[in-house]
Picture (cartoon, rainbow, N blue to C red):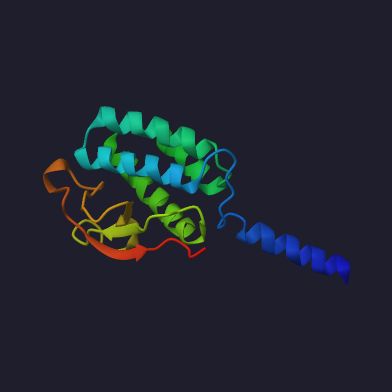
Length: 157
């Protein structure tokens, strides 16, 4: 009976472990801070800023143990065009969106945003640390397209 219980516990831990914060040197807040910077660079459609922000974002993500986030970040780091980076950015946004409700270190709310005219499903979401709309999927001329669809508040400690 003890062996079966151990196997069940190990299976549950393995299944849920990627949903829980497991940070080595940084915090989810560190990852989000660099994610926000990357999103701002994408909203500005500035290739140099995007590449610089992507390097910093990748460095912070590498310090975590979020396997899916690390995998996506390695893929996005190889991409050259802003349009292609935006395709990976939505995957990263969805991964981070799943993690933020479980992180006890966050002190500020996270705003989940979407622009329906760009994408009608959830793959067009992005996260922000404030209410100002700066759409990372749009060109600079229409970067204000979007609205807040959810506010994720920090966990009560």
